[in-house]
Image (cartoon, rainbow, N blue to C red; front, top):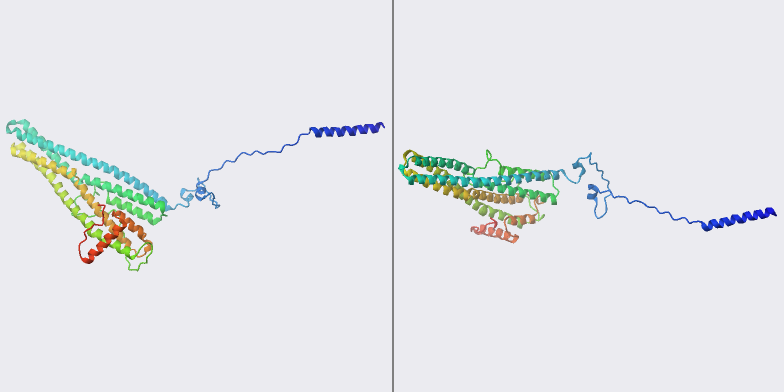
Length: 421
């Protein structure tokens, strides 16, 4: 009995202890995992180029900045593109050089003109004072005569040099070179933006840069353009190319039609017969005037210097009068020539004649190309020609029609192709 009670007591105590443990047991909380957000690695340049609309191209691109050259990294950029960018840098440098040299030679024109006129007028005033003072003034008159003779001689030498280099014409050359280099720079930038350049484009750009360097040289000694040629020759700043001639029949594609070809031929004929001839005629007039003025100025100052020298030896009032009058006339001639910038006017006509020659050759070379696929688009080419001539498309077609009618009827063409110049 005692053992039964003990076992019952043990069973009851164990069960009660289990109930107490169950009553006070704490339920297990669910485990929560905290993870730090991963930082996004910046996209490489190749992934940015391959990504589009949120989807990235799955083609793996290996990039090794330290071991792979830049040209091999950017496989989508051709060598011609890098070469064109190098040419752009050279063109930008040339634009700055021509601009700076143009400003320098503009200062030359102003300073030399003012200095020579001041020297000439001062010497003429001295000669006039010496003539008014008379023969009996003695040593003071001799000093004025000597001073005026030296100043006239210096003015003659400076004027010969100034007329030789023609600073106003040099300035106009640099202006045109700057404008044409900027135009070439814009053409290359357009090609890089909208096209896929090739090696032919690089060679063409190089030839254009070298042709501009030859047409508008920077130094004065040795390669300076002739300021007094026998007659006006249009400026040529583009590379000359031999375009193949062919008599193959042309198809109406790439924007070209028979009517458009006839229109372009008539426009080229009008440019040749009217615009080019007119500017060559005006340029020859400006050239002849500049030749006369460039000869008259030093001749007058030389006569004034001789008159002052005769004043020193003979004290003749007539020699003083000749010196004063010749000095005044030389100052007027010098002012008209360099103040009026006659050399610049001649250079402007020469460049305008070159512009029309370029347009004529461009139209003819385009039409001589037998494969129309190799030509520029016909509609685009027509629009460019119209813009360069300052006309609308309808006005350009009217000019072509008038030229055709005038040739058929044998009457002279009374209208120019260009409305800009």
